[in-house]
Length: 261
Length: 177
Image (tube, rainbow over the protein chains, first blue to last red):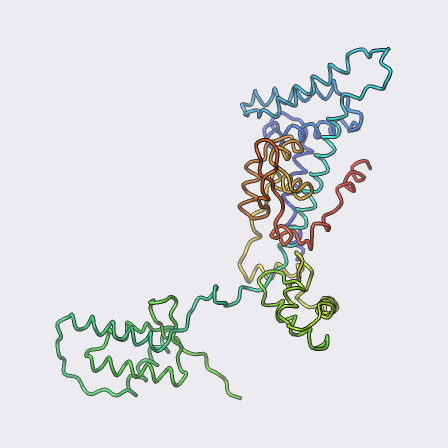
């Protein structure tokens, strides 16, 4: 059980491990690929620089951000438009912060970083929420419901009726007529013999196709006897008639022994 | 019927139901029984399942009740079912789902605004896995499609309803620590 619980975490651990990768050159590719977007990259840089999200050193972070985007270019990773848009936003914020403030401005000017900070915080919140969802799904996937039950919509077997059985019998009988009949002299067979024969077949294998036993018959007479034998078996409750679909093959299966008290 | 008489009937109904089954549906099946009695019987059943400490548990889920095996025994159940845990959602899909769960109903452009990245393929995955559903069009220019989470979402993440999602603002406190 311990194994099972450790098995559940690797994906998250991997994601975290990727976030904490060092900046050696051969790890660039891995690192770049896992950034979901510009906000992810920014959060990573902020964490790595160990600076407050509420007071981002824009010049430094912008520089690093651009370095990463440049690296993506060099490594031939298609830089998505969002990364470039963020680069532009960062440069814009940086320039705004460099501008000397108008000393005559009466009211407090909003920090140019404010919107970005809000966006980053939102993004991080949803990342945490995604993490919680991940954990919940893992827990939930460990709880199993019962297997589906037999219902009208979900039924692998439809019990065949005697009429359907008769239908198969007639079908085979008709096919027989088409073939030139060769009369083979046979001993008279009894229904009891056929019953025993079918039981033997069932004992050997799990199921017997009704069509097959009919076709094996040497004569019409034998078929009739087999038909009666099958009916007898059904009556005795020794077998089950199963038809998996309408007009499909009818199969005889052995009824499980009922242990009588 | 007394509550003690109702309990075994309700237990059997919850057992056979494919989806979590709610008090209302149970009430309809148990003609003439008051919803209060059905509720009381369900609550007692949950208690009984929990105190018994057996292999099964009964929980509230997606507005109904469901009987499942206990997660502790998943290793054995999986061994029997020969099943692997189903394919995990990618980080992108999970984040997109989190945004939809908290901000629903929401359009794709609005998701883009929050995530700073397009989420089209993540949306497709989530739709395919029926974790989200279309909720009509937003009455703005372009009439973009609105998305929200499904009942399947609640089941998948073991939630009774959306109010059970952890509070987003709590994550903020966590971050400033």
